[in-house]
Image 1 (cartoon, rainbow, N blue to C red):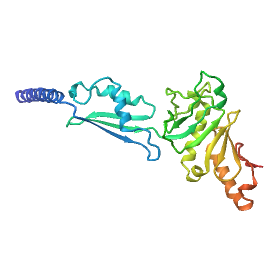
Image 2: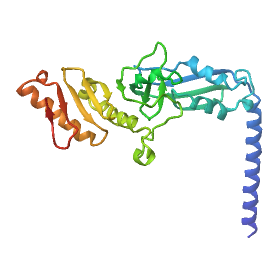
Image 3: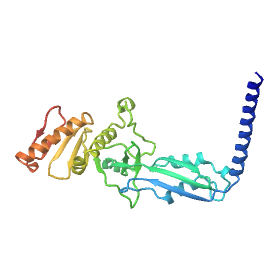
Image 4: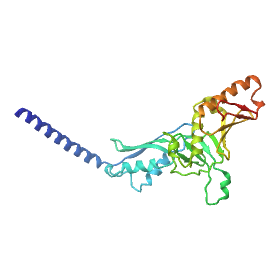
Length: 273
């Protein structure tokens, strides 16, 4: 019984000593100065929007000195929050190395479609109908001067203007999340473009999407003079399968140039004219 009590006491004393040592080390480490800033940006090679200078400017918005400041005084959570709230940033991780270097790892959002809101809105002077990107995670990204992403261009009857607070709930059913239909067109665009980007042939063939006044999508191919009436964002895989059948059969019999319109929006039908 005494041996057991002695073991417990030794364990408690050991834990206390360890805690004290850790506290001393942390206190000493916290007195060290931040020596430098190291930024790493993860972005697609063909559409890099963020630079190290951009990230450094985000950090400066904190109003706090970073380089030369004591490590204990550098608010890591505040800096990370500042970066994560930027429209081009998907996520970031900010941490201090043992050598006193503030490291910032940033993952940039990936644009998948460039959206031009309805040009008819330009007559309303109070509205900003500037184009923007939809990202792969459902966020909206403003355009940056001098930097362009080679993605599908979407225009037509699009009434949703750019707002950095808009984030499409692409990880669940948008029907439940968008009961008022405010972003239905954007969801349709997102779903169709995401499907296209997974298929090399479709990605090379479909360069533009037009939204008509009914909110239906019209695909404009790169090759051929025809257009594809796609309809809404339902049954995407089946519609594209019908389109693939058209390309396979039409090329064999008459060729794509014989048709002006390919309609795949109706179930189990391909209407060509």
